[in-house]
Length: 100
Length: 474
Image (cartoon, rainbow over all chains, first blue to last red; front, side):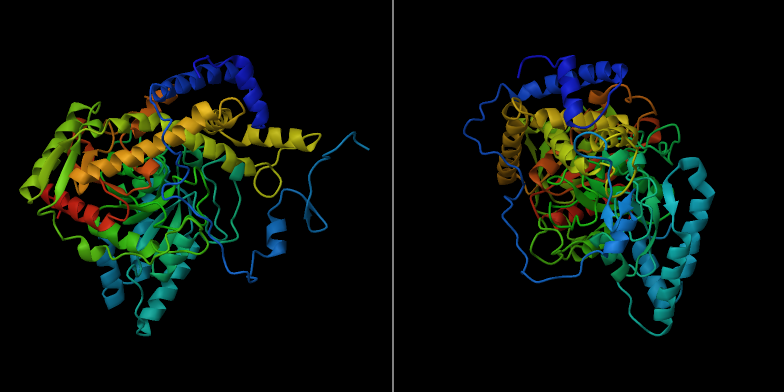
């Protein structure tokens, strides 16, 4: 946790997050994100070993609904919002392999 | 401007009408929106239809709900059927949701008239509205300064007398901080009290929708309308809306108020002076002031700026150019997604997605995100300890009064520090209210904050009302 954030770390994270950063942004983000992580180091001095992590303020438990069908959004309305659609389905550029 | 409760009374009794109250709102919006950039979209025709339908029902002798004919402004991260909903982001520009957020359905049932969508920091990430893709909103009290954020547009709409009520959302202070900077009452309810269905998610375990109003009574009225269990939000508390307006005048006699050092230290002198005078006012009203130190609150900022970006990085993964919103073409699906997200998101949103992705990535998860979740537990325990000694807590809402445009835009850490006093309540899922009390530098309003345990809204409204009266705003 004490190692500084490197430029290549930021580049790797951008790839994971599906973002393309310019050289300028890469430099700026490296410096700014380091600063935020640096601030987070104040948590390091604490002994938190005996604490349970809280992901939810009131201890979320599974909430299930009755297993009955309910109306949902209209198919045509949803497809009409898509940037591209084909035969009532969302259309995207090719996913696998070489272009035909 | 007339209060919401006065408008509802007059509209129901026939001494006024929903249509004429709406005209007042629309006239003010037309007069000032060009200058202040508050509303991203004004639904004039829809609002006029809603108002006309209400007036017809009243003429037939029907009882409308508690917000009969009251114009309401909505933060533009709340989905409204057929109305452009952008989150102030280019990635959603032009998108019209096919459904209403639960809070909007409840407003309509109560007789309110939604008039339009207000500006925010993109995806509610910011404390000044300077992160909006559609330009900043100006503070109506001093147009050289920010209105706060992220619900800056909703705060400014009420401060500029455009609507008596507005809804915002608060993830780390995004209702309370702009309320403080614009001289309003702002409420972050107990987590789960208000349904998040139809609120475009930023950090799901922290987000809550709440009111921004001119006075305490209107805030209680609005919260009563939007609160209560909703089966469409699995984190919604399984209970009906509590009675709040009936407790506004309960007073604070016999209550113990914890004046928390960590919720004052670091604030400007003018803000500190207001908090001290607020403590005096509560004491004069019969409360006992207990000075407390809760050192864990200092860690809140660090934990929040890992937890909120982590949740955001996951929530914002859905904006990928496939199902709705912007698409920028690419050769294959990955390059299409990269091009879309790179063009669609602004700099602060990218920064937080990056931070969250990093905090959740292999090798760093335990050190950052895991550690932050434990600090969250520590914060909850610290609040619980404080409530052994006090019924509710008092502190500042923000470290300073409204600041100038550009003052913090180049230094994200400085901007993040705007939320240092508001974040602990979000981490704990507990309610907090900001109420204006006195004026600070340049004659600008100061907000003081009342914080309470889960489901203590009625108590906080009573405390806020005491301060409102002591401040000469009856």
